[in-house]
Length: 334
Image (cartoon, rainbow, N blue to C red):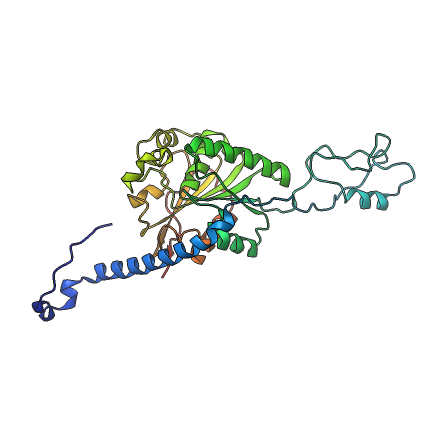
């Protein structure tokens, strides 16, 4: 962001047209910046109130499974059972990998294959940023649920995490658990700030592209950020710097990566220095960069206009083949 020196007040200024002292472009940027800053302060205050509610990892339960829709064979049904009674009993089968408590070797066998998923849309996993927790996604979760995303989860990683690679390995185990529990082969991930970088490392360097259909990042320093140099004492902050080993690993070739990346970046994000570091620029990745105008870093996972853009990105069909470098449409938040 360009910083201009404030002119001292002089009576002569009253005789000079305002448009010559404060050009329209500068005035517009200043007003937008003031609005965005006020919104950031309000969001920060609200988030501090909600933060304690997100410290504990959320409880997870297996989604309800649909009834099995197939006709039984004579071998499936116990002697004396009719088709209707068999289907009724089969509809109460437990989750994947378990056996019916009423099944025996002399009666019908349970399916060894994974049961069909209850939803056609893949689960959504939300990953928070640095020194944060799942409470930052309260509004986004509600928005996704209201628009058909019924299986949304958040993952907390420890604020004492010192290595992006370690956090990515934890994410990998959690994604496998979600797939096993829900019956889906792939998931969607939305990562805010550092969360997006952890998810990208998992996808690119740990084989996560087999499991992640779409990765949406919000204000993520994909090329590293130079903000707050005094925080370099923290190891994970050093890994978010340009030229770090983690950033260097993410710049390496990634041929055949199957995940579709969508990166939302804001022109008023003061955490991303330079601003373009929140864009994905990699020749092997299917990536779309969406510019957001009028909000700051903290507002990205909160603002309803951004939530609508996230829903659109998740609902879009997976890109095939070529790479998209620019967003079809940006978002303007007034």
